[in-house]
Length: 554
Ligand code: 1PR
Image (cartoon, rainbow, N blue to C red; front, side):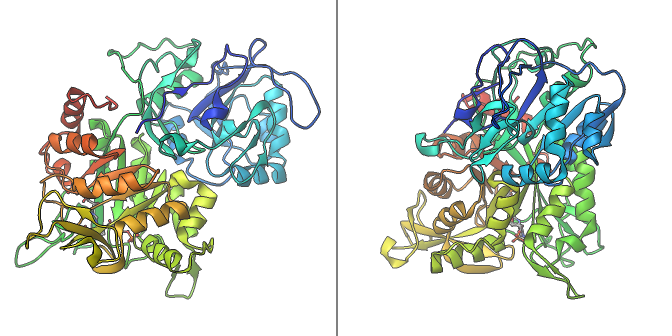
C-alpha cells in the first residue's frame, strides 16, 4: 500500500497542493514578491506572497520557537550539528527581533493555536512574516499558517495562507498516518532544495513530521548557509514513492551489574544459557544506535524491556541514552517501555502522558505502548466506550496519532477449528504440533509473561480506534529464531487495519524482509539479533530489497 509522492510546496504555483494531502514534513516559507497570493481569514484582507528561499542572515544565531509540546530536540540537535547557536523565544518580542526564525511545530493543531494565541506569539508571528524575515516552518509550524485545520476541529489557524489542513483520506487504501521515507515532487527549483534531488525524505504525520537524516540536514544547511557552495553528493537518488522501512530495534535493560545494555531474547528470554544466567549483553545502546543510523537504518527503536516493572522516569540512564542518541542519530527514534499511569514510593502520581512527555523531551519522535494498550483495548471492547482517559487516547490527543505506536507481543495458539475460540483465527502455513490447521494469536503483557483474553486481531482493531498511529507487531514464537517473520500473523493484522504495521521478530536473512513485504501489507520490517550479531548489515538487506523491486531509502 503506497501513498503518492508528496507534492512539495510549489513556489511557482498559484495554489498549494497541501489540502488534499493534509500536510507535509518540512515546508519552508519565505515572503517574496512573486508567488503565492494569500489573504487572511479574519476579514482584514490583504495580499501577501511567499516563496521558498534561503535565509540571508549572516550571524550564527537561530531563533527557535518551541511552544512547549513535542520533541523539538531533534531540530535543536540538527541546528547545533550545523554549527549554529540557538536563541529560544521567550516573549513575542523575541520573534520580532529574530534575524531568522525556525518554528518546528510538533503536536496537535488546536493545542498549538491555543498557546500561540494566549502568549501573543500568534500576532508576533504574523508581524514577523509580514516584515519579510526568514522563516522556516516545519510541519505543524507550516500548517499553522493556513486558515484552519481539521485536526481537533476545525480550528482556526493564523490565516497567512489560504486553504485548510485536512486529514488524509484512507478510503482509497492509503495508510494513515503517512509514515516513512517518501519522495518529494519539486515543481520549481529552489536554492534550499538543491541537495534534495530524488532522495527520500521522512514523513510522519497525519499532521506532523521532523527533518531528519542527511536530506533533512541538507535542507536545513541550505537554509542556514544559503551562499555557501555545497558539493552535491554523488549518487543519483531514485526516490519515487513511499519506501518500505528497515528498522533496527534495541531491547534495553540494566544487567545484573546495573549497566544499561542492549540485550536480545530468544522467544523473549534474554538470559544466557549458562549457570549464571546473566543478561545477554550485545553492546552499548548509544553506540549501537549510532552505528545503525550510519548503516542506513530508516528508524531506530528502543524498548525498555523492564518498563513493565520499573518506572521509566526513575530510569534516568534510559532517558540519558535517548538524549545522547538524538544528538547524533538523525532518523526517527521510537521509545517504549513502561508508558502507563504510575504512583511512586512518595505517593506522587504520574500520568502516562507525563511519562510519554518526558520521553519526547528526551528525544523520542514516537513512543510505543505495550501492556497498557492491551488493558485499554480489553476495557474498550468490554464497554464499547472510549473514556478519553487511556494512555493511548491522552497521548495521541496531545501529540497526534502518528506519535503513538502500539507494540503487540502475541503468542501463537493452535486450534483444530476456527469455532474453538472466540478470537479471529488464521489458516496457518505450517501445521501445528498436532496437525492443527488454524491458530489465533494471544496478546500478552509484562514482556510476554502473562497471556490475556484478547487476540492480536481484536487488539489491533481496537487500538486503531483508540488513536494508535502505528502497530509494532512482534511474535514471541519467532523472536530471535532467525527463521523469518510470521507471515500469517503479519498478513492478518496488516489487512485488518489502515494504520501502518511494522513486522517484527524472526528476521534471519535478507530474503525474510523481501518475503514479508511481498506477501503482506507491512509498511516496515524490524529486526534486532541479525544486526546486533553482525550477521547481515542493514545495507545488504536494502540492496537485496532493491534487487527484488521493493523501494527503499538508500
Ligand atoms: O509493556 O509498555 O512496558 O512495553 C514493554 C516493551 O518491551 C514492549 O514493546 C515489549 O515488546 C518489549 N519487551 C518486553 N520484554 C521483552 C523481552 O524480549 N523479554 N522485547 C521485550 C520485545 C521484541 C522485539 C525484538 C524483535 C526482533 N522484543 O523488540 O526486537 O522480536 O527480534 P529478532 O529480530 O532478533 O527476532 P510495556
